[in-house]
Image 1 (cartoon, protein in one colour):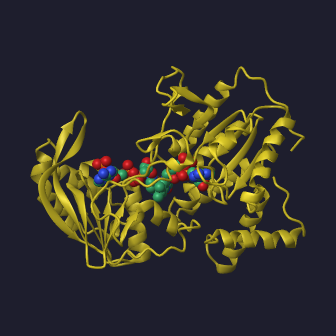
Image 2 (cartoon, rainbow, N blue to C red):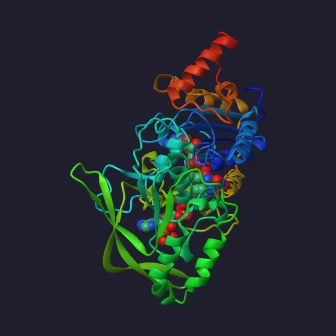
Image 3 (cartoon, helix red, strand yellow):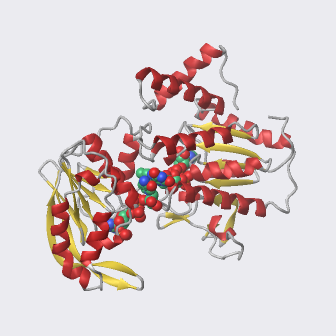
Length: 462
Ligand SMILES: Cc1cc2nc3c(=O)[nH]c(=O)nc-3n(C[C@H](O)[C@H](O)[C@H](O)COP(=O)(O)OP(=O)(O)OC[C@H]3O[C@@H](n4cnc5c(N)ncnc54)[C@H](O)[C@@H]3O)c2cc1C
Ligand SMILES: NC(=O)c1ccc[n+]([C@@H]2O[C@H](COP(=O)([O-])OP(=O)(O)OC[C@H]3O[C@@H](n4cnc5c(N)ncnc54)[C@H](OP(=O)(O)O)[C@@H]3O)[C@@H](O)[C@H]2O)c1
């Protein structure tokens, strides 16, 4: 550690694609990076969001992140949360004297759309289910009883992932995608439908187009063309493994979750909508008439918001950034955290990735956002003299000291290497592509055991 040359030292909170891009870029330029991450493992949604069967994408990203972590100027504290009443607070991190702190904590807050009954038994948020089937500790062992008929709200890629899981793994009877606008406003990537298209009820889809035909025509849309395009996208469908019927219910905005005497979901009440032109786009407007969709569970796949308990200035589901553009490209203002109460920037504090724009874009977009943020941080440090490497080591040690009593089981990058080894061995033993320990307890026990085997001593913090 103290072999490092002098340079800048930053703390990156969050080790998803955005945080790892900031860390990668900063460390490549010879500066020092300390990563603090809620999960034991790095990757964020690349590890715990991307559908488990996408092995190539996932293993490629895992390798990229391993290579960044292996750099001597990058250190890691996993299993450590930053926020109010968490392991470390924003003020504590700011007090350490790092040159900058980048929050790349993703969109961990739950977006609710405020319909009556949304706390009933059988109402779920997509992110929680995604974390469940990807075995994120805290979610992996939680029961999610979805029943046989499932209404999924939204028509983005997350809806398709949830339908994929319901059709190919849970093998439920029926999945209904409930969409407040029309089929022309579908947001999913057509290529992602291969996992579900064998199960789409094509007759029901044709009837649904007939049902909404007049409302599409009223805004100049061509129902036949949209229908042909939509069905034409159902290509290279994976062979069906279940009898699940997947259906679509368009122009329907969720209004109430209807429950039985045990407060269990029995149906979703939707208000019928029509489309209204808003420039190049459309908006859904309620018609005042309602219908019921019978279902056992309702899953909201409508995007997420950031987690306000992190403790950064927050408004309307987002962390607040500088309202005054800098004129640079990328614009510094997009990433600079801003305190509206004082009308000032929060000095040295930045946001990147889904912490900056919740639920927006793919891994590549989050990576680019992290890289842009890295550029902005470097620009902000241009007039500051690099620090002695010794001082940067002190920041690391101070974090260690703070964590000694609060989070003695913080995971180091050496630990992660051991964990990866163990999980690889378990996968080979079980003859499966990927093995994951479902709880932090299991992960930490496996690491401890391996540490004793390999050296007897506890791992030195990396
Ligand atoms: C269900 C789903 C499937 C997806 N599938 C694909 C796909 O197939 N292909 C694709 O390209 N993109 C996919 N995406 C999009 C992609 O996952 C995101 O674009 C990307 O992960 C966002 O990166 P991020 O780093 O901003 O946030 P995240 O990936 O969410 O990373 C956030 C990190 O911050 C950490 N963290 C959170 N809170 C704290 C805290 N308080 N303190 C410390 N650390 C904290 C978390 O542990 C995590 O490591 C998918 C997204 C979802 C939701
Ligand atoms: N396989 C993949 O590549 C993959 C997988 C998952 C996620 N992702 C990416 O992750 C990002 C997030 O995906 P996402 O599916 O969560 O978001 P999304 O693409 O924005 O879709 C959200 C859906 O929820 C609907 N919605 C939002 N608010 C609503 C409300 N109040 N009432 C009813 N419906 C509402 C939206 O309808 P409106 O259009 O009317 O607002 C939209 O259909 C996207 O960039 C996506 O591409 C990628």
